[in-house]
Image (tube, rainbow, N blue to C red):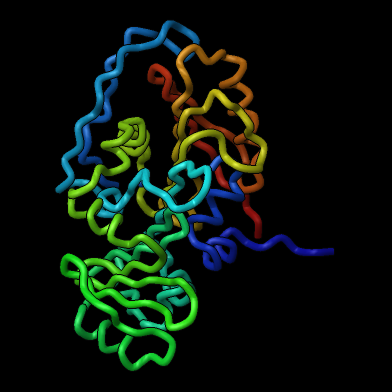
Amino acid sequence: MHERPSRRSVLASAGALAFAGLAGCTGGDTGTDATTDTTATGTADAAPTERAPSVDWSGVADFRTWLTEYSTLPSSNARFDYQSVDLGTVIESGRASFLDLSVDNVDGVLFQSGNTIVVGSFNRSALSNAVEVADDHEVNGEYEGYTTAEAVEGETKLALGEDAVLAGSDLPVYIDTHRGERERLEESDPVFTTILGKLPERGVVAGQYGPPAGGEIDAEAIEAWGTSMASVEADTGTWVYAFESGTSDETVEAVESGLAASALTDEVTDRSEDGRFVTFTATMADLG
């Protein structure tokens, strides 16, 4: 008989991305005014009038300044996964692992659209030297205060800065987004500001447009959703769903049932509604 992997081992090997995917539906700073001005009660009533929440970018978790709606992936749903706890294994694997980043210098790791952004405090000169002595990477320039580099074989690009290390493609887009020179995800669609404002934790955070892939939830009425946990071993998790206006109570109930049936949850313990935004709290399953 095969033993199921523990939640810690799953998250340690793949970071927040694994949690979000396996949870089937698939954190704290606030820094936002996430209150919505609604004229409807419940998701099944007439479409509410929502006030776009404001964002104090100097007060939010830094990963939010990197989020963008831009993607090189087909049929992008703006999916993002962020982890600020249990980072050792996360930074020891992946395309930037050859840099031997110290976990003491890392605040968190963001995954979006196939790209990795390691946020923290770094010595740009030392990182550049590490690339120069590596056999399989080479420095090729500079962009807005970041040293740029690339893999000798393959298509991986790198950007090395004092505040972040990026690996992937189209990295200037993310740098410009972080600098405020391009529209950020929450500026493109404030629904994510409201969702993130309702999530209580920043240890493990994920979000995207549309229903989650796989799992037990397949409600097309989900415009977007997000989830957060304090750590990979937290006893509880929080999910926030933004439903399309006019969504029936039956659909919301079905989403709740799907969340309860998820591989990583035990039971849904709380549910609250704020217009079309529904927040669930669930206890996490003990996978051993």
